[in-house]
Length: 65
Image (cartoon, rainbow, N blue to C red; front, side, top):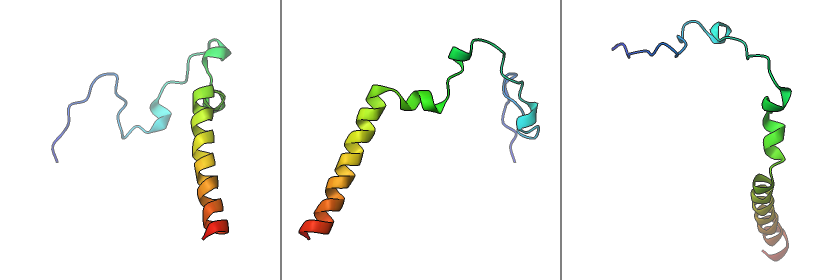
């Protein structure tokens, strides 16, 4: 196989995830995870609209067909 060029800041694939440095200790407010993303209003509106469309389609299939 051809060797692809590797940048200095890219971790080597053979080293595995243990080779990555641990996250720097800092402000816990800056280290927000997935639950913070779910609390965002645009995402919740989008998920609500998709959920309503799925619910309407399911009710249409169950009750009207």
